[in-house]
Length: 303
Ligand SMILES: [Zn+2]
Image (cartoon, rainbow, N blue to C red; front, top):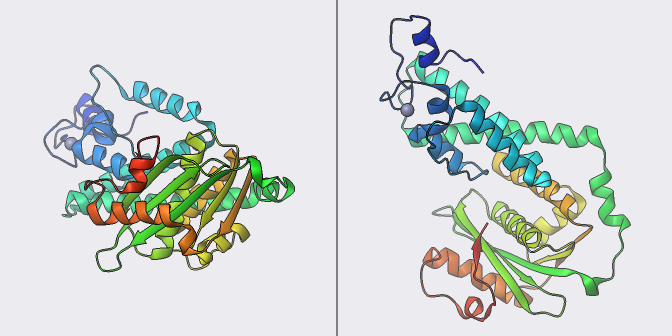
């Protein structure tokens, strides 16, 4: 890998600014530019990959990439997402670096992070849509072929809370065994632009939770008819960039399960997931636990 970063230019006896385009403090090496600069670290952490970049002594770019690929391979189904997404992210980081360097853009680091991730989300989702359109419909049809007995399915209840003024959302999932006992719970929170996207993220959290718990046959239950119906028929219209990336990740996660179905339930049947989502939203997951969490066997996790 040999992009004309400051360090490479310096070796070619380049006279001029070789400092990092983001922080202007350090010599711009590949590693610093893509991973170690505070700005780059923030970008990785804010991406859906959620990677915390540790500064490791004596590591070069190749060490980093090898570890990364290994991490992706450990988790094949997610790996497809992680790896492809990361490639797009590396590309976007480099593009933004050139913008900042040559067009002397003066935006805040936060804005740049956001822009890079937005662009990445869009490019990746577009690429993925084309990929699944060309590969086959195997994922989609498998769910229908495997008619299953509901009694041996894991049940995941999902719900979301969304504040349209602050744009804060919380997405919650409660996993129950087929006999109705709570096995585990998870949540995610952040900001988004629509209630339906928040509901979709609740379903993504539910799928991730079920996967983490080793569930093979799964029924997702929720009280948002539009989103459940959309996922079931693979038809969700008017998705913005963020939401269509989430939709793509959900489609990919479906591969993990040998059986998967989405079932709509009444709000009154979805009390637990609703309560968790409300708790996360109101107390930012820091206030006293609601009863529902205290009753659960396992601690609640963030997905
Ligand atoms: Zn820097």
